[in-house]
Length: 339
Image (cartoon, rainbow, N blue to C red; front, side):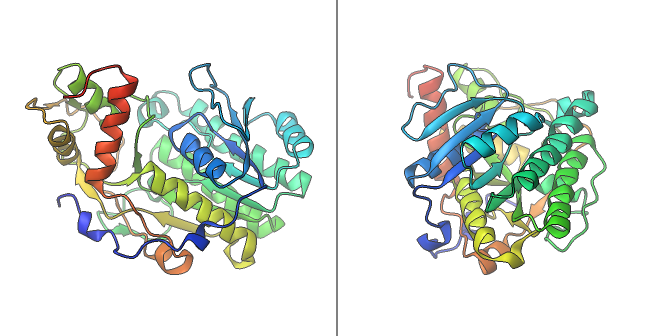
């Protein structure tokens, strides 16, 4: 197993694959989240005008940047979406809004299905009704594949989820495919590996939870038995992937309804990931294994060969560099001095 850093390609991503975003008007749902903020930043850096819709905007979350407009709202509100699409002349939609935590999905599946499935069909229906959106990306997840017995996930595989969060993402995935094939909507789908990076305040997740524990001089906790295997993708690489796919589906009609995996070949068990973080932070703490996780797939491997081949996308950030940047973000934002 191990970190898998060698799986990262030596080729740099061709900048043209990202597309030309200057002057485009982009609605990003879930803009206050980890990926939403990173996508918004990449769009703003490229000259786009970004409307960031989120149900959970707070003063702390606000993005203070030229070209960014905060839009408080619920993605399940058709009227609000229709108004934004019409009045703001939106030409691109990046749909990231979702309930993203496995534990709460098990405890409250109805709310998770509502946010992730109803939110997706409401957004897609608003785009269909408006008829002027030129490119749409819907975020699914590698979790939508379910348990493949440890085999690498590939896009041709059937979606076979068995747990609430996984099923909710598969629903969103299938809805996007349906609106593309039935109504010709210019929508494509991302299925990303586990994301990490600065800005994730869901402390139950292994990366932010471990970093915060170390900064508090507390033993980090692993909810599983430590052997669960995941692919990890730095959030900035995922944000670039979203832009690459959005630009491509706007230009290439054959990509409508198509899904693409995005991963970096950085594959670790939970215990290995915690050990990597402890190394970066130069900590001698040892993790506590809780072994309380349930309704999770033991091993998830993600092949991004299709994205490399058909989109020219390559991950750029190796695990060591990504973790160092992530740790630095939490040190600054949790107001703890550097070691």
